[in-house]
Length: 201
Image (tube, rainbow, N blue to C red; front, side, top):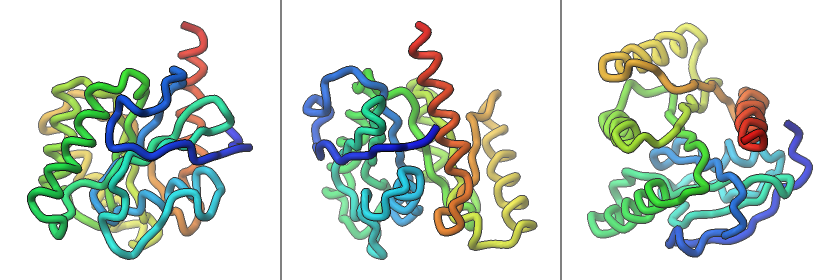
């Protein structure tokens, strides 16, 4: 898939106020500072489409971007940012959960994981919750340029092994580096395949 056009449409805290035209939505989520905005900018080839920040917890809204006038890329708030305080974290959790559980247009959720870290309990619990609610999702390991190939293999295999403890089938997995522009084509091709199957229904 070639992205010819990517436009910001709307920001919300309420899934009911999101676009109502029925186009499929592909949402991106992860813990704060996982590299989500950089990945979105790489995928769309638009440097400032999603706001990047060295300060975690920047995204606090559901942001919709229309891609090629065919589907929406949705930038969801990051979860688990400790400095938000309990009340702030709870508010973000509600925004995320309401969107994921109630948004009929959500076609696939891409969960971003920083490949430099060992499996985090908060991510494993989030995936467990997605599985219980049968939310279709895929995993994206980010920042693959930040560690050696050997360490990358070791870290990601550890993660997959951990998932196998509770999952019969592992969701699709992608490996990306926004800095080196790696992995974007695979993600876009995956989205294109799903869109084609939706068109055939």
